[in-house]
Length: 290
Length: 80
Image (cartoon, rainbow over all chains, first blue to last red; front, side):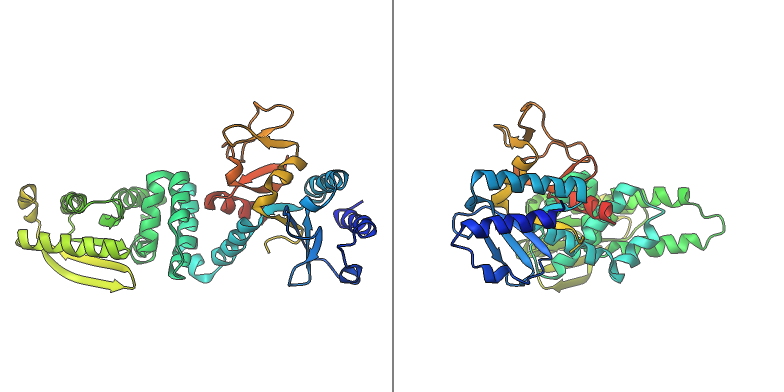
C-alpha cells in the first residue's frame, strides 16, 4: 500500500471516530503536499489555505493511530523515496535552488568550476545565496556562520570576497585574461588564486568583532602585504552602521598620521561601505610608527 | 518545491518524526538509536547531528541531514 493510500485509510479511520473532522472538507480534494505537526491546539486533520496541503497532527490521534502513521512515514521515505524535511529547511532548499540556477549565479560559477577547488566552489555557491539574501535586506549572520563552521576561515574569506563582488570584478577577469595566453594552464592560475583568497583580495573586511585598534592594525598589515605584491592601493569593506562609523574614524586617523596616503573612493550604499586608499611603496617605511 | 514526493514537518513534531525511525535524543541533545543509545546518528559528511539541527531524512541507506546551509546545498545536489 502506498503512502497516499495509507493516508487515505488513516483519514477514513479518523473520520469514523472523530466528531472534530468535517467529512465534507476532504471529499474530492486532491492532496498534493503532506505536513506533519504535533500540537495541542489544532485538529487531527486540516487543509492548509492552499487547499492542497493536508496537515496531520500526531498529537491529536491515539497511540495506535500514531504508530501506524509513523510507520507509514518511514515506509514513504524508505520505499517510495519521499523526502521528509522540516518546514524552514524546505524553504531554504527551495530558495537556494532558485538562486543557484539563476543567470547571476551561473555567470560566476560556470567560469570558475574547473579552476578552483571543489570545496571553494561549494563555499562560493553558499556565499552567492548569502549575497542574494543580503541584497534582499535579510539578516545573513546565521547563514554566514554556517559557511564558517563548514569551510573555516577560508569560507569566511570567500563569503567576504563574494559579497563585495571580487569574484566577478577581479578573479574571473584575471582568469579570462590568463586564458588568452597560449601557455595558460590551470596550474598557473591556482597559485595566483590562492594568494587572492589568502590575502582576502588584498582588502580588509571589517567585522563587528573588531575594535578600532584592530582595524588600524589590519589595515597596516594589509598595506605592507599589498606593497610586497606591488599594489598601490588597499580596499576596505564593512557592513552595518557600527562598522561604517568604525571605518570612517579609522581611515581619518590614518590619513592624519600618514603623509602619502590618500582616500580615492568612499562609497556608502545602504549600510555598506567601501573605501579605497592609495599610497606609494615608500609608505611601508612609515607604517611601524602608527 | 524541490521534489514532488515530499512530506514536511514542524519543529514541534521532530521527536515524533525521530520516533518513526526508531531514534531519540541523548542527554546532550544528539540524535541516537533508541535500541542502542550510545550510537549517535551521523550526517552524510560524518558529523553527529544535534536534534536542534535535524532537518530531515532522505532515502539512500537513510540519510539524516542537518539544517545548516552547506548541508542543504549538499541535499539539493543529491536531489538533482
